[in-house]
Image (tube, rainbow, N blue to C red; front, side):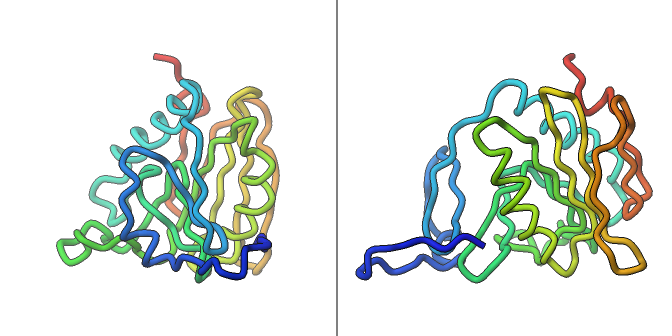
Length: 189
């Protein structure tokens, strides 16, 4: 996790305080108690994350798992909250008792669509944060420019495996027993 040199008078914001703030339509994340504004995404970024979300929403209906888009926060540390492009929670997350919750624990799967301004942070800082979550078993990084997918997954032998799928390959998510076709991820219509 990143450490920031802060003015000694600055008090770090907790995740709970951050989630109670209203930023309007602005996109923000909390890192080590510091609020960061995030630039709006490109058409390409929005299209790909939308494609993934739409595909998963239909395929996961009735399974007890549900995808959420980047409007829903994920706490990765005491003072850090991320807004992944898509995250999948299981165990009936949309049950009535969860309706007002702003955090649901650890997602089973996390997706980040890379952009030129965030790719390094997504693949280094955020990836390590996501891997440290006890309930997360798969992390997917999508490169829109190369139309490639990197899958990082926890295996029963207790090891994280990490690799780019061959060009044009469909994405299999064993933890959900689901495959997302390559053409669905990168669809332009």
